[in-house]
Length: 187
Image 1 (cartoon, rainbow, N blue to C red):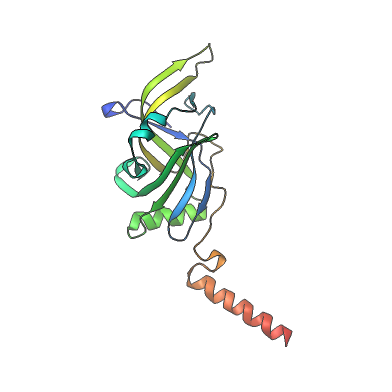
Image 2: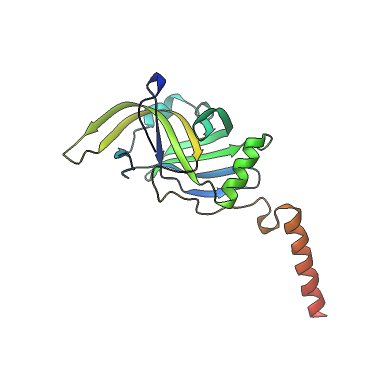
Protein backbone atom coordinates (compact mmCIF):
# COMPACT_ATOMS: atom_id res chain seq x y z
CA UNK A 1 0.00 0.00 0.00
CA UNK A 2 1.40 3.35 -0.93
CA UNK A 3 1.59 6.01 1.72
CA UNK A 4 2.73 9.54 1.59
CA UNK A 5 1.74 13.16 1.58
CA UNK A 6 -1.78 14.02 0.52
CA UNK A 7 -3.35 17.34 -0.42
CA UNK A 8 -3.39 19.51 2.69
CA UNK A 9 -0.37 17.69 4.10
CA UNK A 10 -2.19 14.70 5.62
CA UNK A 11 -1.10 11.13 5.25
CA UNK A 12 -2.73 7.75 5.40
CA UNK A 13 -1.18 4.82 7.18
CA UNK A 14 -2.56 1.36 7.54
CA UNK A 15 -1.75 0.10 10.99
CA UNK A 16 -2.52 -2.83 13.20
CA UNK A 17 -6.10 -3.40 14.27
CA UNK A 18 -7.56 -5.89 16.60
CA UNK A 19 -11.32 -5.62 16.79
CA UNK A 20 -12.59 -6.91 20.09
CA UNK A 21 -16.23 -7.12 19.04
CA UNK A 22 -18.66 -6.13 16.35
CA UNK A 23 -22.11 -5.97 17.92
CA UNK A 24 -25.40 -6.49 16.11
CA UNK A 25 -26.17 -2.79 16.43
CA UNK A 26 -22.94 -1.86 14.63
CA UNK A 27 -20.78 -1.10 17.68
CA UNK A 28 -17.17 -2.30 17.62
CA UNK A 29 -13.87 -1.62 19.31
CA UNK A 30 -10.21 -2.33 18.83
CA UNK A 31 -6.81 -0.74 18.28
CA UNK A 32 -6.21 1.60 15.35
CA UNK A 33 -2.51 1.89 16.14
CA UNK A 34 -0.10 -0.22 18.17
CA UNK A 35 2.72 1.79 19.71
CA UNK A 36 6.26 0.70 18.89
CA UNK A 37 5.29 -1.60 16.00
CA UNK A 38 7.09 -1.06 12.69
CA UNK A 39 4.61 -0.98 9.80
CA UNK A 40 5.24 -1.91 6.16
CA UNK A 41 6.07 1.73 5.41
CA UNK A 42 8.87 1.60 8.02
CA UNK A 43 7.06 3.98 10.39
CA UNK A 44 6.53 3.57 14.12
CA UNK A 45 3.90 5.49 16.08
CA UNK A 46 5.32 6.42 19.47
CA UNK A 47 3.28 6.60 22.70
CA UNK A 48 1.81 10.06 23.15
CA UNK A 49 1.81 10.84 19.42
CA UNK A 50 -1.94 11.55 19.43
CA UNK A 51 -2.21 13.18 22.88
CA UNK A 52 -2.30 16.80 21.74
CA UNK A 53 -4.77 16.08 18.94
CA UNK A 54 -7.07 14.09 21.21
CA UNK A 55 -6.97 16.92 23.72
CA UNK A 56 -8.37 19.27 21.07
CA UNK A 57 -10.85 17.02 19.23
CA UNK A 58 -13.78 14.92 20.35
CA UNK A 59 -13.97 11.40 18.88
CA UNK A 60 -16.95 12.39 16.72
CA UNK A 61 -14.78 15.05 15.04
CA UNK A 62 -12.42 12.38 13.71
CA UNK A 63 -14.15 10.81 10.72
CA UNK A 64 -14.93 7.11 10.25
CA UNK A 65 -14.54 6.29 6.56
CA UNK A 66 -14.48 3.19 4.39
CA UNK A 67 -11.18 2.67 2.53
CA UNK A 68 -10.13 6.34 3.13
CA UNK A 69 -12.83 7.53 0.75
CA UNK A 70 -14.24 10.87 1.99
CA UNK A 71 -17.39 10.10 -0.04
CA UNK A 72 -17.98 6.99 2.09
CA UNK A 73 -18.51 7.91 5.74
CA UNK A 74 -19.78 4.77 7.49
CA UNK A 75 -20.38 5.77 11.09
CA UNK A 76 -18.82 7.70 13.92
CA UNK A 77 -16.21 7.17 16.58
CA UNK A 78 -17.52 7.24 20.14
CA UNK A 79 -14.20 6.75 22.00
CA UNK A 80 -10.62 7.32 20.97
CA UNK A 81 -7.87 7.18 23.57
CA UNK A 82 -4.26 6.26 24.00
CA UNK A 83 -3.42 3.52 26.47
CA UNK A 84 -0.31 1.50 27.20
CA UNK A 85 -0.78 -0.58 24.05
CA UNK A 86 -1.80 1.95 21.45
CA UNK A 87 -4.69 3.98 20.07
CA UNK A 88 -7.88 2.34 21.34
CA UNK A 89 -11.10 3.12 19.46
CA UNK A 90 -14.79 2.42 19.83
CA UNK A 91 -17.24 3.27 17.10
CA UNK A 92 -20.69 2.66 15.74
CA UNK A 93 -21.47 1.91 12.11
CA UNK A 94 -24.40 3.80 10.57
CA UNK A 95 -26.64 0.82 9.87
CA UNK A 96 -29.36 3.03 8.37
CA UNK A 97 -27.05 3.46 5.35
CA UNK A 98 -26.40 0.82 2.70
CA UNK A 99 -22.61 1.15 3.06
CA UNK A 100 -22.83 0.92 6.87
CA UNK A 101 -24.84 -2.32 6.64
CA UNK A 102 -22.44 -3.71 4.02
CA UNK A 103 -19.35 -2.93 6.11
CA UNK A 104 -21.07 -4.41 9.16
CA UNK A 105 -21.67 -7.68 7.32
CA UNK A 106 -18.11 -7.70 5.97
CA UNK A 107 -16.70 -7.13 9.46
CA UNK A 108 -18.89 -9.83 11.03
CA UNK A 109 -17.80 -12.34 8.38
CA UNK A 110 -14.13 -11.43 8.77
CA UNK A 111 -13.82 -10.22 5.16
CA UNK A 112 -12.82 -6.72 6.27
CA UNK A 113 -10.80 -6.53 9.43
CA UNK A 114 -8.32 -3.66 9.27
CA UNK A 115 -8.11 -0.04 10.31
CA UNK A 116 -6.05 2.69 8.77
CA UNK A 117 -5.34 6.11 10.18
CA UNK A 118 -5.24 9.34 8.18
CA UNK A 119 -3.09 11.98 9.83
CA UNK A 120 -0.73 14.88 9.33
CA UNK A 121 2.73 14.37 10.80
CA UNK A 122 3.45 17.16 13.26
CA UNK A 123 6.80 15.88 14.51
CA UNK A 124 8.91 12.86 13.49
CA UNK A 125 12.49 11.67 13.88
CA UNK A 126 14.82 9.10 12.41
CA UNK A 127 17.24 7.56 14.88
CA UNK A 128 20.10 5.39 13.79
CA UNK A 129 20.64 3.82 10.39
CA UNK A 130 17.61 1.53 10.38
CA UNK A 131 15.58 3.93 8.19
CA UNK A 132 12.61 3.80 10.53
CA UNK A 133 10.66 7.02 10.94
CA UNK A 134 9.31 7.54 14.43
CA UNK A 135 6.08 9.54 14.55
CA UNK A 136 6.28 11.61 17.74
CA UNK A 137 3.24 13.85 17.17
CA UNK A 138 0.38 13.42 14.70
CA UNK A 139 -2.78 15.34 13.90
CA UNK A 140 -5.38 12.58 13.47
CA UNK A 141 -8.05 13.37 10.85
CA UNK A 142 -9.75 10.06 10.16
CA UNK A 143 -9.71 6.35 10.87
CA UNK A 144 -10.90 4.06 8.09
CA UNK A 145 -12.12 0.50 8.03
CA UNK A 146 -9.98 -1.12 5.32
CA UNK A 147 -9.36 -4.40 3.57
CA UNK A 148 -5.55 -4.36 3.81
CA UNK A 149 -4.00 -2.89 6.96
CA UNK A 150 -0.40 -1.72 6.87
CA UNK A 151 0.38 -4.36 9.50
CA UNK A 152 -0.20 -7.81 7.93
CA UNK A 153 -1.07 -9.39 11.28
CA UNK A 154 -3.93 -6.96 11.92
CA UNK A 155 -7.12 -9.03 12.00
CA UNK A 156 -10.51 -9.14 13.67
CA UNK A 157 -10.24 -11.25 16.80
CA UNK A 158 -13.94 -11.88 17.42
CA UNK A 159 -17.36 -10.86 16.21
CA UNK A 160 -20.37 -10.65 18.49
CA UNK A 161 -23.87 -10.52 17.07
CA UNK A 162 -26.68 -8.62 18.78
CA UNK A 163 -28.35 -11.82 19.98
CA UNK A 164 -25.30 -14.06 19.85
CA UNK A 165 -25.77 -17.11 17.62
CA UNK A 166 -29.48 -16.28 17.25
CA UNK A 167 -28.82 -13.23 15.06
CA UNK A 168 -31.30 -12.96 12.23
CA UNK A 169 -34.41 -14.92 11.40
CA UNK A 170 -32.57 -18.01 10.11
CA UNK A 171 -30.60 -18.30 13.36
CA UNK A 172 -33.77 -18.00 15.43
CA UNK A 173 -35.55 -20.68 13.37
CA UNK A 174 -32.56 -23.02 13.69
CA UNK A 175 -32.44 -22.47 17.48
CA UNK A 176 -36.16 -23.22 17.83
CA UNK A 177 -35.76 -26.43 15.80
CA UNK A 178 -32.79 -27.53 17.97
CA UNK A 179 -34.77 -26.83 21.14
CA UNK A 180 -37.79 -28.74 19.80
CA UNK A 181 -35.59 -31.76 18.95
CA UNK A 182 -33.97 -31.64 22.39
CA UNK A 183 -37.34 -31.56 24.13
CA UNK A 184 -38.66 -34.41 21.96
CA UNK A 185 -35.61 -36.55 22.79
CA UNK A 186 -36.17 -36.08 26.52
CA UNK A 187 -39.79 -37.31 26.39
